[in-house]
Image 1: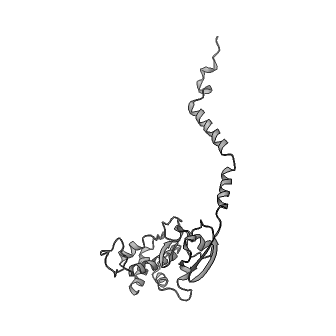
Image 2: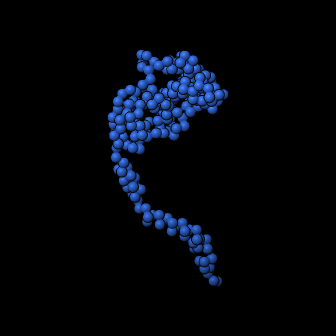
Image 3: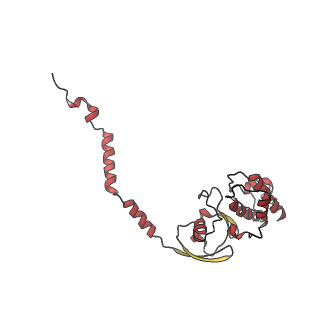
Length: 219
């Protein structure tokens, strides 16, 4: 009887071209990037950025500090100045929780670098009203119950303040019937459109709109 040759079992002994390429690729990567190289490069990149001095006004107070040039305005307000009323939601400019007033204009603080604002005037929710003397918009939010969890409320209020000023200056919106009209009435449709960048996950939108209308009518 002739014994079977091991080659009768190709599935065991044969190496496919695909297996050879995969093994060669893995070996090449392991040789090119030994352990620790990525971490070393990350450390070098981090050390390459020196803090930059920055002077600006925050809630009518002069502020001088040094910041990492990669730091967002949102992180500077929260981490460096302790102004945690400005919330970090999506950190991608999609929710509006971090809305502040920059030279009177509403801006998502997570989308701009702190070092870009030398000499600018920043106003956060902490600079709007006082514990014993609320801003009319804050009073309206309380009266209309324009919040539930309250996480988005600082951004909603800052955005509403900026939006009311935009309407006063005659800035049209997508739903404005006459874009040339200077005196724009803040109807429910106008408010909803202009505030669409501020998300309320508790869905208190009817109350938020009502609070803003109360103030807009008196403004």
